[in-house]
Length: 336
Image 1: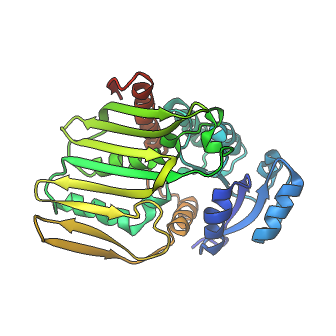
Image 2: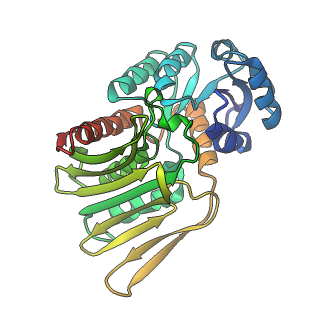
């Protein structure tokens, strides 16, 4: 057991941190949230006061220079992930960075290289990967419960209410695919990884509705894998909230509701076999953000590898890049 908890700092006062990740770090068994940084010291102090964070910094650079911080959480806009991940790595800080990790696969690889060169732990913050619901789905797929899956469908949509939201700003890496569609792509690829011979997508096709700011406000896409596995997804920033995925095979299918943000409520995976035949796999409620923070701290303390390597993020972004090329080209299929 480590003598000390991992000492966390957060770069930015973003809402995702305030609502979900930072309280989870504070609840974690092996981490302490000790500092927050903002471009404005007054903003940082007010934020720190509300969350009970001991230290507040008026610049990101000042937080990275602090000797009493071991790791940083980065919930900045997508366009700033690369810059501040590399700076954090060069400062010797371990890094948990919000998803999507970067704007493209090349940036992901630069970030990973910086982490490796400086000997720091680096992970993308896909918290749903730590929920036992996700682990159970992969177990069922690997066990052959529904036969070898041939189709996957995923959806994640919600409705923005503010036209000023950064998710609508193209220069900051906004858009429905980058914000919530990345979950769909990630779960499709994760499930495919549990299927022998599936590998990574080889072809992508997408259609999008582009908003006034130039970002994709809705998108539907398809992915094809080398073994014949097919997948589809929908994502959107203007639709009622939906988040689910289904995995279908010759012997049955799995249906997962509240797939990515189930909160701490109990959930269930429904396994269907023909008409009227079903099994509900009950999953006790957990805090997936807390599990993610504890896993990350454990990897720092023990030296064991993170659950999914940064190379996974680069693979996710290669697929997202192909989907964007297709959507911008009027739906023409693109190689991944």
